[in-house]
Length: 302
Image (cartoon, rainbow, N blue to C red; front, side, top):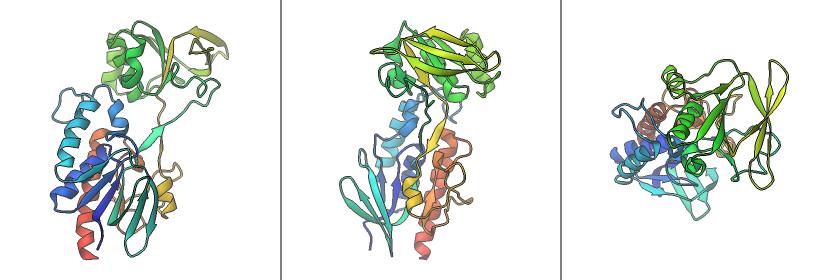
């Protein structure tokens, strides 16, 4: 006997969907998250590509998903998983308690990748930010720099512009990786892009006051006066719990799965950004659904 049929570690889009599918199938499901439910999904300012919604903020969608998930599964937020032991069942030790389960679903997601430049850690929270939705309103009417060239960077730059920030983008290449519709929106909103350049240093006494930009083509440095730096250059997988359990990861640190979201460890599954690939909300939800469905089926056969 176990406390739960399955324990889902992480309650972002993938974890919440796993809770919905697991609970609706009649499984007893516990979702655990060291922070608030939603993960990095809370930071998505606006989506125009999630099926069923022409436009929706990440926080709004998380609220809807959380309500749906907690109707059929248990959610414990602000409870960090410290250790997982594998025996006849899985024993999950958290910052608050210990639980047992027949199956584990890793939906631990990823964390923001850092630039690794002088001033980044020193001025974190004092002008250095990783979430436009969280911190953007503090910079209304002020000059800020968005670092990155993917969808997240473009979305956050649009958000910052919309709330009244004077925003520019700096990107290390000569073209963005963001989807075409987002690039079109950047042009439409006249958000300037500093091409072929990287942030070399972030400066300021008590708060961010300037950044030194290095042009990779000309080799020249330029100092820009800014009030804030928003960094959106990708994520790193949060895989330590899985690795400690013997789960195989690829060279990038992402959990290796098959088409049923199975890992190499029996009755251990993974879903969402922790598996790499296309880091999109809709694919995370799909993987969460698949993981919970196969976990339910395979628990019955053991």
